[in-house]
Length: 157
Image 1 (cartoon, rainbow, N blue to C red):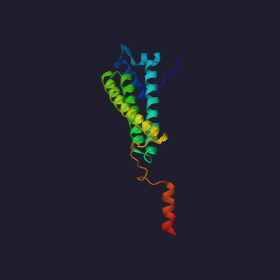
Image 2 (image 1 turned 90 degrees about the horizontal axis):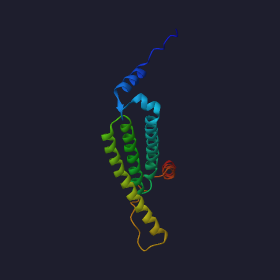
Image 3 (image 1 turned 90 degrees about the vertical axis):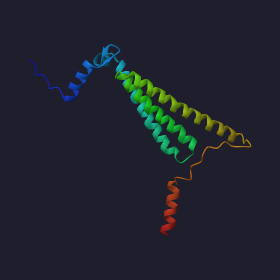
Image 4 (image 1 turned 60 degrees about the vertical axis):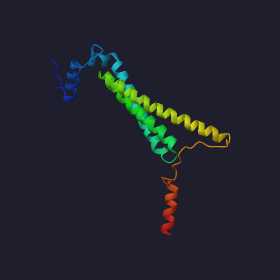
């Protein structure tokens, strides 16, 4: 008779959760093996890493203008809330998942509005229109690495 391996605490908690958690009439283990739960979790991880990419873009946008900062902040928050929504739906928290989707939609709408604003501003600038739309230039707030090196050379000389 083969000796059984002892269950770890993690495996025991998964087994316990699978018997207690019901999603659409199926246990967590049934959903996991059918693939529908893994699809929801994988989509959540995709959205999580899209949020991290948006955060990187947001940090880089801090040297440009307020419209780009607004776009990438909206996208970052949209992806964070969508990740939470998918993961809450995966564990049968549909009401909270729906609320998170609404919040995500609000931030996506903010990003879209800012995107149309920058598009219109760039279109006006490209045809040399008599007036320009304000984009909130903030490039002077964070000095570039080149400026810092030049200032360091001036003070050291």
